[in-house]
Structure formats: structure tokens, C-alpha cells
Length: 273
Image 1 (tube, rainbow, N blue to C red):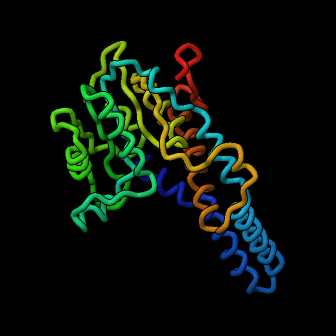
Image 2: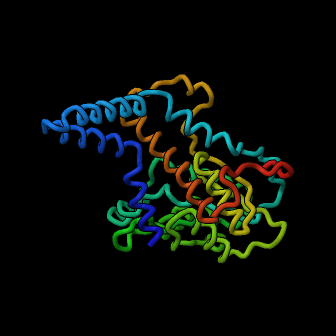
Image 3: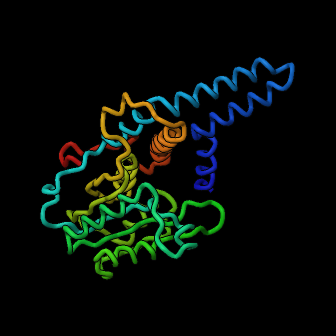
């Protein structure tokens, strides 16, 4: 129940949807004599937020703060032994994959391609894909089998591959993967996910008792230079604002629910990760 409510709740607090709601509500109210002034103000406020969120560097700043939280460690820091490489789902388009009978990827595809690169560097490491479906209506289409087929085609031996396809969110990625792998003390697992998603991911895995080396990918910013970069389209800027908002709201909810041990997970001072 909480899972469904969280999905529905975020739909209504997503910045792009808030802008649309303000504009539509304002236009409706403005049709009546009594609420015309209020309606005009609401619509104007919605348009102002839309322009600021969609065109200003605000989205870049919010994404950058998340991306910089966990720097990628040098390959040399991994040493010669890696027990496993954990790939967080979210890069696969399950519905299109099932319909077209070929693995369909979105802009987070680097989670998969970088994991393949790591798998080649560490040929003894297990490769774990964790990702079910986040839909709240029906069962949804899971692309785990197609991901496994891709990994095999890329040269990863089938016996190295582990699939977890029941998780619906990041917390379940962590808990279900931990239950399957039962990692021993002092083992080394590399967690591959989008850089902006790494704080919430590491927080959830730590809370599940699973210490991982963060391996951020799928960067959306080039660095501090993007703090002065305006968006060339409303759609592009709003997508960044929505992605960032989901992560910040998720961090608050995960801390509230006890799914992370910190509101703002960061590298361990002693481990550097």
C-alpha cells in the first residue's frame, strides 16, 4: 500500500506537474468573476515556475549536488579482487522490450555498458542485475531475461550472472539482492547506478547490511560549468528538475521510513566510499 501511495504521491508533487496544475487551476478560476484575480495570479505563478525550472540552471545545480556526492574511485583502488558487480535496473524499457523482442534501453543505458566493461576487467566477479517493475497497475513487463541475454552476448559467462527481478524500488533492490547473495564480511561488491541516484542507493544498501563500492555512471552534468548553463528547451530543463526532485524527496522518505541511516548518505571518512 505504501509503495502505491508513494508512486501516486510523487506524481502530484513532481515539479512539472505542479506547474501544470497551477496553470490549469488558475485558468479555470479566472473564468469566474469572483476568483478571477486569484486565478490569474495562480496561472502567472505557474508559468513563472515553469520558465525558471525549465530554462534556468536550477536543474543542473540540483543534479550536480547529487552527482558530486560519491566520486568514482580509481580502478587501482579496487585491487585485483572484486566479488561482484551489482547493476541497478532502470535503464531497461520493459514494455518496449517485450513488444519488440529486443532489449530496449533508455538514457541510463550506461549502467549496463559500464558494468560490462567492469565484468571484463574482473572476469571472476559475479554480475548481478537487480530490477523488477515499478508499475502500480498490473504486473508490468520485466526485462531481466533480456538483460541476461545481452550480458551473455557481451561475453559474460552465464554462470556468473545472477538475476533479481522482484524489486519495485531502490530499497527492495538492496534487501532482495542482499538476501540472494548473502555477502560475507570483507567481500567487495561494486554498485553501478546513475551518479544522481548513488546517494539514495548507497544509503539503502548500507541499511540492508550491504557495504558496496559506489561506481557512479550516467552523469547528466559536466561539472560546475553547468551551474551557469541555461537550458535550450523547457522539456530538457523540466526533466532535470523532476529527476532531482525524485531523488531529494526519496532521500527524505527513505530516512523517515528507516530505509537509510542518514538523510544525506556520503562516503565513509575511513573508506573513502
